[in-house]
Image (cartoon, rainbow, N blue to C red; front, side, top):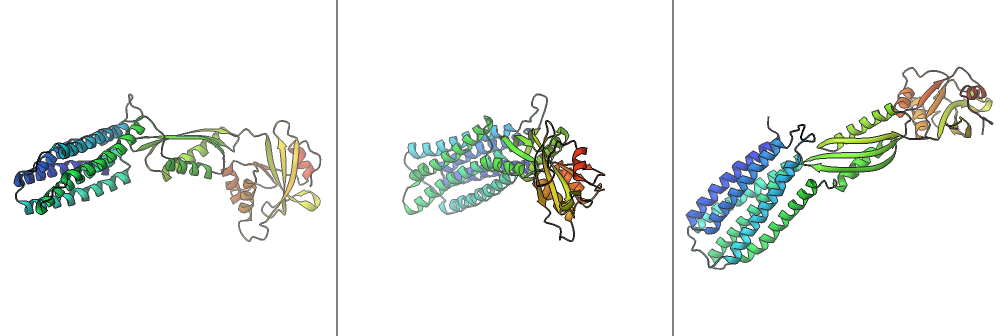
Length: 399
């Protein structure tokens, strides 16, 4: 089954064949050399449209020789199309500069109606193809739509010559030169964009900024070291280097996969994402213990603990370097205290929690598991004994 972009390119082939016969007939009918010349231009459009269709069909294929696919065939087709646009502009400006005199036109009224019909057809299909190119991200369809724009301009030049014949004024050559400037500009934009992709230029700023936003929204991302990307046809290849607030590679891999899924969801036509990741090399561990401050006892109820003792401990020798208390702001909440407290501790950089009872599938367990926080269960209620159990070299246990 053909994709939407492929059906559109095939439709474009048929449209250009119809335009060729229509222009040639009107040229013979009116004696207009410009219309006959423009019908020859339509033949080049037929060739271009066929090339676009072939490019779309083979660009998706991957093989051992082309493991990343033949996506750039689309950009190669866009490059060729830009050259056809240059050629069309050259034809028009040559006709304007070198043409001698003006041919005697006949059957002006019916031919004028035919030219107006061509303008409506070309403009309508150009808008339609642009819309499909934008929705599918196809550069070759975008290039083909730009070729229809040159067709529109050349037809407008011919329309001007016919209107001038009605009024006895000949302005078609001046109009041809002006139109040629627009044609060369459109071809230049297509040419430059195609060259950029073929030479692996960076993705556009807006796309990279969107990828950056997705990555930095992940709470376990500590630093985005680098972000690069390139286009290949309509598809995107993205590479990022991040540091994650986790201590093991398995957890880092899970976060990396989640980031890939989010990027693919938010950005269309992403073929390949490569995320280099490494767990953050932490010098300190932050341990949270729910406690009853008055008697230095560990609270039995995690979500209803009045305060949490936060211990900052060196990984190297397990020595206590700092301790402070965090007041539980959710004591008066009727529901979800445990989850809210767990989220608060994660935001405060806690990577280990000591509790009296297992969570047994309750909300805080999922919050800590998602954030990579280690949960330790103790049977001891005295803070000094808990710290001894954790083998923390400590002095004071209270602020």
